[in-house]
Figure 1 (tube, rainbow, N blue to C red):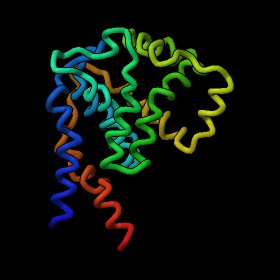
Figure 2: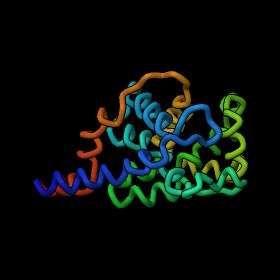
Figure 3: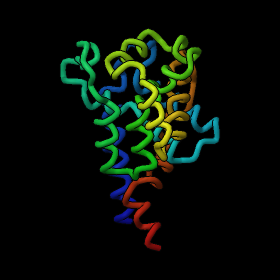
Length: 197
């Protein structure tokens, strides 16, 4: 019972930023909450493993952690808010590397795909193109090769695919309750208990 309570507290802590700031937009037509839910839904529809569905759901939480009380965001001021790093660090308190590493690398995945796939680059939204420049722009060949060598390369690219898909106005997808049990089962406290059984 205590384990379940700790896991619920972890999940509630993770979802609270979406309750506080999820109604805000960041250059896209849909809200941050809607974007998160759509990305998770596309991951589920793609039969992604549970950890990647969660990464898709939470990948942009770093944006929500950097909005201030006035509703201002670093990228709206022409600054890189490093949301992928901030988000991964925050999530690391509650989840393991199979969730946090793809989150940390989803911006690198955009830079990689924009550098290696012209069709992907031309399909980016205006907001994504603007943030791409803030986030370091295109990768050179050596940086691309280093990224390809990451053990999280494939998951990061899959997450990026869901990220691009999850920007559709009017798309009806399951709410957070649909993923609550999945989140519970992937918390550190539950995973560590399972690994010791």
